[in-house]
Length: 344
Ligand code: NAI
Ligand code: MG
Image 1 (cartoon, helix red, strand yellow):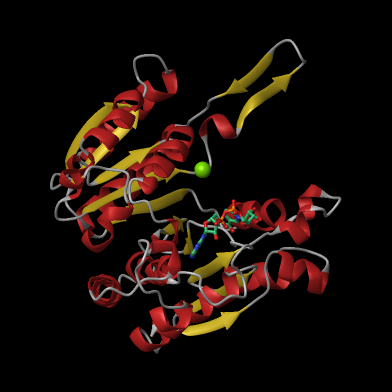
Image 2: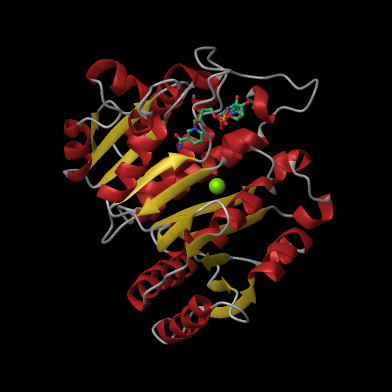
């Protein structure tokens, strides 16, 4: 039986995860779901934001559905390694070997007014997927030093690391519009020279995908100038951190954005891009769609269940088309619904 670990977390986490789980039970009733504590909720109950039994459950599952962790209540924990984000999210990614972060930036025609882009750039909707390498590059390279006068960061990539993320990019493109744009800075960075050559090599295995390359500064420009030219973008850790936030905000709706973090095989962790939104927690008004769309990604990437994934995405499009809005995606004057009614 396929197994999914469900970690609701803190703030609006439990509210939105409950609704996403309700959708998952309807669409894929055969999947076994097991809940566990994570984040501040886990810290309060056990003294640790990622208790060993939660990690064990995740490792024994085929995929993880996560809400969000953190909040002001836990920012004051004296040991920063026991705070929810550092103590739960980072170790979770590391222990589960998640090296690829997938963030779709989809602008639904019904929500075009929330975007900062001109309407003509969004005609017919927008759907870009950013694939970011998560475990290498500048964030983890050594040495890392700062003596007060001179500071050093080191950017390191191995060929193996580039090969495996390139495969994720090509395979994602195969499932979508069959176009992959690899982003680097090969005119000045050695890691980018290796990156580009390696992506070219991997491309030979995917003759059905059209590959292009862009330097990162140009990619940033093109994303705002004409975002529809992109289908899938694959890039290294630092560039991906920035470009995925930039692409996401083209849509203007944090409450709508899902994400997937993939490891080897089909294992993955799925979560909304937003945080625990303590300002609206407990009010029943959080937008559950980012988490519901994360369930669609879970079905697609961990279980290969494209039909069920599409059913969810089509339903989301339909409710938006029918005018249902939680407060975060409503224009002024528009009637709104709560978390549960949106999921209904
Ligand atoms: P946030 O994403 O939680 O909230 C930013 C703003 O967007 C807030 O006004 C919030 O009400 C709104 N918002 C977010 N999600 C929404 C939704 N589904 N429906 C309606 N409105 C929504 O980011 P913020 O405020 O910077 O962080 C709050 C807490 O969340 C912090 O403790 C932070 O550390 C944590 N966090 C956790 C993440 C995770 O678990 N992956 C990611 C980002 C932040
Ligand atoms: Mg970021």
